[in-house]
Amino acid sequence: MYKLMLVEDEEDVREGILREIDWARHGFEVIETAENGQEAAELFEREVPDVVVTDIRMPFMDGLQLAAWIRQRYEATKIVILTGFDEFEYAQKAVKLHIDEYVLKPYSAQELIDVLAKIKRRIDEEAAEKENVQTLQEHYRRSLPVLREVFLASLVARKLPRREIEEKCRSYNLELAADAYVVSVISMDTDGSEDSDGAAAASLKASKDTGLKRFAVLNVAEEIVEKHRLGRVFLHNDYLVLLTVDVQAPEGGATVLKKTLTALEEIRQSIEKYLKFTVTIGVGTVCGELTDVSYSYKDAVLALDYRGILGNNRIICIDDVETRFVEKLRFDELKEHALIRCLKVGTPQEIQETVDGLFQGIGETQVSFKDYQIYLMEMLTAILKAAKDANVDLDAVLGTDFVPFAELHKFTSLQEAKNRILGLCTAIMNSIASQRQYTYKSLVEQAIDFTKSHYHETDISIQKVCGHLHISAGYFSSIFKKEAKMTFVNYLMHIRMEAAKELLRTTDLKAFEIAERVGYAEPNYFSFSFRKHVGVSPKEYRSAALEGQRG
Image 1: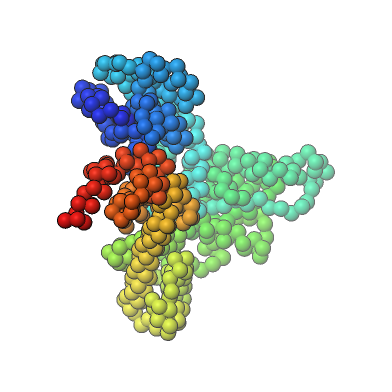
Image 2: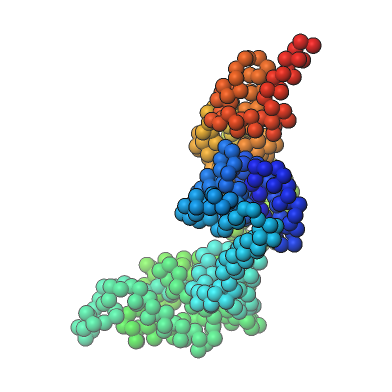
């Protein structure tokens, strides 16, 4: 069902059109009617129509002026012009306005229906073109290798939610379900030496094209990984990354690590033999969940740091150089994002659930007291940073005696730490929510003050108010309607009409003078708007007011 606005100044014609056509049957819903172009333009704020059917000759703003206004702001809206034979040549001159169809007067309901059917087919075709499944599928098929690589890179770069991983795996046809995973990173060594045969200029080793060298390493690695059916190889940052996916790991991490090291040694030797340069490979920890492979990747990159001690052209496992717990406490990006989101826009129930999740399982996890303190410190840092970003006055919210990191030494139990963190988060969340509400009210109050000071100007508009407040029109419209319980256009109309009524009651000013004082450049349109808003003409209103005063 497409939305339609009908603009016609003659009431009997307008009502006749509405009555004679079964709009729903033909795929349209008449959402607004207007008596002239000016009124139609004002109604656009409420709901943007798909089609506007408008007469040409109307007071205040004619059909072609309305069409120009629409084209400037709403390019997708279709425009049908209703025109008499004597106006047709004039209407045709408006071809630059991209009028979609013309209907010559006098016309029958069927003629208008036929034109609207053409418009509907055109909109349908445009929608179909945008949603052409075949085109999208072909584009998607060609983009799939790139999309897979981007996803795999994001998988190791940060912790992703399980639902997102499963959805992307289905979309990209990736089989990554397994019992164990490990991530390895391959980095090219730079030693500055030349080939022994002296043909440095002709060798890949001597090439300064690192992209070409990395591509050569990728080809070697892909062939060996495919042979061992090990997993996925892809480029990420300056590394070649191998994600080992072991679907049968009866002995846990030992099996997947053994398979990975065998393949990596073959890769290292092949690169040295065939490409004439060396690589160093870092191997991360084994993990049992795909959601945790970002940890393994970070450990693999960390392992590479040890080549400064152990040397290049080798495989370095993080478990060989650092003593690590199988399950290490980590305050990752996903946890941080969830916590900050709750602080900024969450509910009390959501902040409770988030904090519960942050502390879940800590008591059963084998971590040192130092790791536990670091975890709390990272959590506290994220909370304080979110408060700072939101301009929270911590002294006012938490008290002047609050010393953030001294808190870490006061906790005597896990439950005490959890309760303190929850209380801290709740206080900050409430402060941010209160401040946001104050900001909304402040903006609306500023808008109202500005409008009251400038309503008499004919060019005042929502754009002008937003320019004064330095905010976007979309954002302003939503908060104004929420706070003022009416749209800005209705509010502007309201204060103009109230001012006009006051002037009619207390002065002898002519209607055209009052129109000018309340922001109307066109006196006749002022009278039209006044009657529509108040129910009587300005003259009738003044007469009734005078009668009331005498009585």
